[in-house]
Image 1 (cartoon, rainbow over the protein chains, first blue to last red):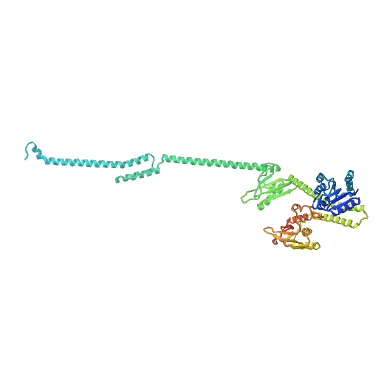
Image 2 (image 1 turned 30 degrees about the horizontal axis):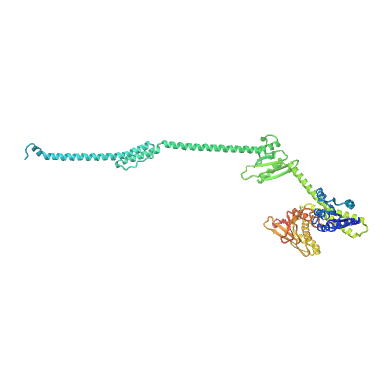
Length: 126
Length: 472
């Protein structure tokens, strides 16, 4: 079984590098995007298992990307990872179809547990 | 010769003839005299009828009647006497008509007098009502109200004042305010009235001791015999205002802290993520980790510095200085950054303003740095000042213009909000810092786009006129 393919979208270079290297170390295949436009191209490309989206991006927000992900990659799980701890925002992104709403900073081991839980679901179905 | 019976008659014929002639002549004379007499009688009668008409006119109380005489001249003196008699009568006689006319005039005068008396009574009632309304209003107001004459003596106090003072109205009326109780609001009232008596113009004051009192006193107009002083206990209002201000300040601080937390969370997460990744793969090359870690730490340091700059208390010690040297220093500091990007800055700024020079330099540095960040290689950034026309005191407009993409219209209302940024890696504090400094200098700032493209920031600052400069 091929490793799960994950897209990480964040405009912070350090976050992308740290998360990518960590998840690669855990055996995931990781793609990166620093803005919405790049993320949309990735979402319209090869199949993805999960997308980790920063909420606030230079050219838009995670809300538009959730919509794109639901359309282009309906099987992919969406995790919103943001520095805005807002209940309203959490409700909004989950209503739109995000599986989880996580607040930065998060220990990557905790992030991995969330990913395993979500992707385990995928493995269960396959 | 005559004979017979007829002879004597014939003999007497001449006699008879004369007698007949004489008789006829006599009769003719008598008839002529009679006719003449009758004509005369008729003429006199007509003349006398004129006298009769005059008499009728007098009888009818027409004393203005005069005889117009065309009759015999011998009656003219009678006519003249008659007319002059009528004249005297007219002058001295009170006729019924005149009496009636006089009576009507008296009645009209009487009525006019009555109307006037009624109007005056009405006016008196209005004045009394107004006075009553004034007294009731004076007493109804729930704050202290006094009237004080030019010598400083209290003419009247209202009920609220009396409640505070105690005693009766008469205890206080006619006394100078200096003899009122030696506590607030009377102490402040006394000094306020003293100021008003000194310069005749209105004054206001607020005292904040155990209670907060707001006082105001009208001035003395040219014809005013008294001034009105009011004092109001505004303790509850002021406490409420302070609570609202605290709440607003807390709200603003909460918003700022949320912004700070967001700005800290990102680099903090980057640092922890990088460390987590590095510890998972200790064998990987250190360089990308170290470079990225340093970048995130720098970002946090910059954030901290900008937050301190944003929150720095305003220095009230402003010093007179020329903006030309501030602009020149900013251009000099940014020269390496410009050279690195192949940009140039054209500065044409001058004007004397009172400023905190270091803070004013920050305005130029932040705005020019923004322009550098948004300019394409080879572009020229322009900063120039112009005197705003028809402003008193004079205001100076300083225009910062770049040739980049400019602001998005939807972003314009938000560009001075803390942490709003479209620039990756930006803290979103650069423009809010500038905004704050400009406002602290009594100026204003607006953001927009130039008609020919590029961002245009306009800073408006109050100029110091040469006449206002006091030598140190």
